[in-house]
Amino acid sequence: MSGSESNWQSRPLGELATTTSGGTPSRKRKDYYGGSIPWVKSGELNDDYIFETEEHITEAGLKNSSAKIFSSGTVLIALYGATVGKTSILRTDASTNQAVCGITPGPDLDAGYLRYHLISLRRELLSHRYGGAQPNISQQIVRNQKIAYPPLPEQKKIAHILSTVQRAIEAQERIIQTTTELKKALMHKLFTEGLRNEPQKQTEIGPVPASWDVVELGKLAKVGNGSTPKRANEAYWEDGTIPWLNSTKIHDRFITEADQFVTPQAVKECHLPKVAPKAC
Image (cartoon, rainbow, N blue to C red; front, side, top):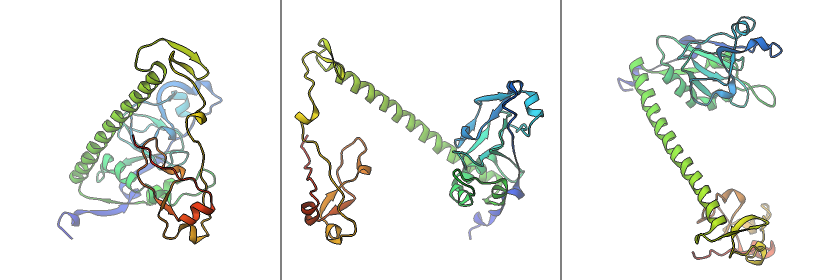
């Protein structure tokens, strides 16, 4: 073990931080909602930061429920619901509902490091889920989770590196989203206006250039579907050389290879259509 690795320790989270959950003021009391206190629901946790919330509660709602105020910098983790296991860090003082566990790190633990570590441990945490249709994790499961951690300065460096990478990923995703929206807009323009700036006419599929014809696809192309040879028949699959596609390979782009292959016997006996690549 190197010198730096020997500085790492591992302890249950409950020994490194305090945890508690929130509460939901009675929905029957309108005077409990619409106040100035941010109130976080588990569905708002998305492995990021929370600067504002969808709902707010009043002082009366806070006092007459198990909701409590968590300070900015608190690490949140969803205990149940559709986002179970997801995390966030508060960037404002806020309350939460009972499906959210608030984690206040002690002096040996950095909040940013803890959040990323919990993300890396999500599969392990979720392996302890219990319950029915929407399995839960509990505060005890969270507290019992072993956390490996180096000295605080190193934790901060690790969190900074991961945060920098995350920002780069988010920037790239924004570019992809913008490009995708541009492509959609361009496709709509080209398929309704064409390239020659000519007048449009209304058709059963919407406006198109006046010189265009609208006909059924079946009159312009051969349309058909395939089938799946019996998996139990090895003669259909073993040492197959003919590419066989299923719907998971279709992603609005070119298909250049297949993951599965069938034999000529399967093509013949299962009436599989051969689809030849068309040169562009």
